[in-house]
Length: 492
Image (cartoon, helix red, strand yellow):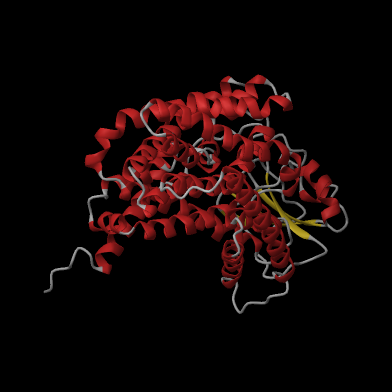
């Protein structure tokens, strides 16, 4: 019997599968104890850094960069698909200010902190650009798992900012990397390039999003499983095309997802479910890669200054930038404090930290290891405080999150005329305790399915609705508000 080589594909596949399975298993535990759900992924990657997989990644940082970039594309597209257009319109201005001016402010304030620890000005500004973007996707799994959610305004601003600030940070980091490598363009040229990149990315994102919105209902794949592949194709196209002409693919892919997600898509539930899984895969991969790229023996040397800089980012650089940017909006102080503190670092710094390694700039390894601790501190410390902070500052929304649906009805075409809505019946609902025949449903509406406990029931006129029932109603869109008066909030 042949002894398997440690660098063989089967061995690497086995290592990857074990890491993924362990990450998924630990995610439930971390959510229950209030720890950000991505931290187990990072820890597992760190534990596996001495395996052949870690060695392979450290020998080719380009592979890590490609993996991280593709992962971020999946995360941003899923974020766009799940962002209501009404939310984007209502809170676009403060989110854009935080995603642009806020990123610049955080970069500058953090550079001041890094300079105090002996980094040169080019290194300090590069570090600031790398750690400046936030990642609300790290926060909200904790909130959803705990059954609470922040008020709409702060939640919307955090989510939009986390998606919109990625392109700005991704434009700043190469400029500062070139500066450190001795090939620095003029500051005016850097900002002009960043503005042009965002403009081109915005145009491509809106255009390709509109194209996907028009084409999706007209394309008839041979199987339902091909619909998510179609939307994945649009996501990759939205990233790749603008990047080829100097635009921001990150901004484009988010906007394309936003436009497509707010349209009538066939097989919608299946598409959203697949992209949610892909986004989680992206998060897992990025944090595993970060852990795998770390050399544990180097960490002790960097730990004191890395932890101190992480604390300064969460206690000084991020709050200072947020306060200055949002002061003109005259939000209550408690909301400003919440937005300032809940600025967790996540996916993008992992990618951006590989830029210095790819360019082989001076002290690139030191910069990467420092980013590891900054990300770790700004994930764990604010992340573990989110639940407590939400309650202490009175940011918790009065409306609990909608319950998840037990059963999904999926259509492979865009259907018109009526739709199926599911409700989880609460004791306070008007219809609770009444027979279906006595409910004043509109003429074109009807209860078509009922799930009680684990039993599927064909509803009759004499069926009495009880608390905890999952009720499925066929109704016209115009009748939905009245149906909700009877049955309560729809399920998610």
